[in-house]
Length: 113
Image 1 (cartoon, rainbow, N blue to C red):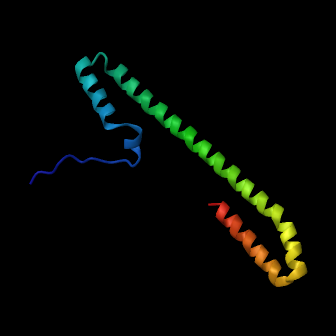
Image 2 (cartoon, rainbow, N blue to C red; image 1 turned 90 degrees about the vertical axis):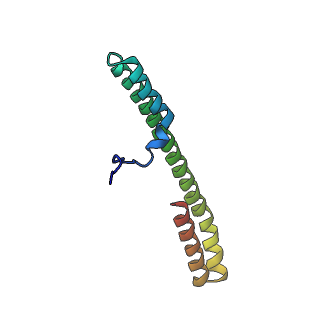
Image 3 (tube, helix red, strand yellow; image 1 turned 45 degrees about the vertical axis):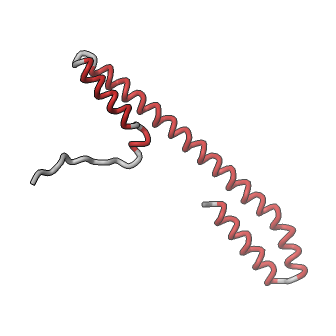
């Protein structure tokens, strides 16, 4: 019974480095020989680092947009809560105030996700 080589898969790596690029780097290393091996490896690692830096920039921008949206939702909810609380207190009393507070809590929870 023969077992194949153990292959570890790291999630998300295949998105960073396409298999054809890896194969091309390996073939280039084989063709160019040991003298050019460091240059081939450095070039490949540089491409991987560049892609990882692009991903980090994208995730930072995405996080910033999410925070801005959350801030807008909370400020908007606070802006409409004052008149809604006043109207609810005048016309429906404590029950209306509790409903408005519950709606504000739902908005805050939904915007935080």
